[in-house]
Image (spheres, rainbow, N blue to C red):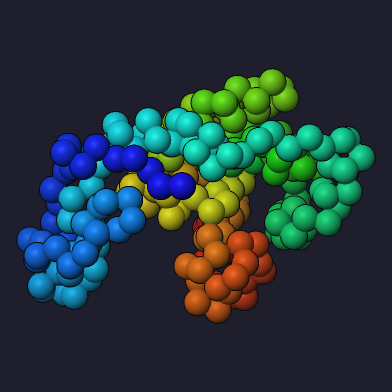
Length: 220
């Protein structure tokens, strides 16, 4: 499936790397958006993009577009997953979860938040998809509607997680700045990127990174 953008209302923009004016269109993506090559730095990018409000509307029903459904997980299955989840393991080895506030940006239907809650964390989330947001709320988990860097429902966090989120964010710098602002000193931020964005892990979404790699970052 492809998003159906209003191609008559696209917003012009300069190169996001060097701010040079766009060169001629090279081609169009399958969803109709044009692709250009910056004449100054060589960056290939979209010189005309949907408006922020149109993108927001798209993500408000993102689960429907992707045909996602709330996972029907028994308490036994959740407990088993909590024991085996690699991200839970990493967090428990880097300061622990019990009694700490874990905030997840882009929490979808809240599966990871449920796992963290089972391990003793106090959890909350941010989620743009309206149906997913309502479902997470029904689980008794505080959740705020909106896309990153939307403000959290609680003022601070000991742990911030964002799984496969950065590639969806219009302004990664603003997202990271907001996440850092919410983090208390000496905490952990975890933000694995989607499969294919990391060359050494082209076929997987969840993986352990070595020292210096961008999956797990300890905040000073």
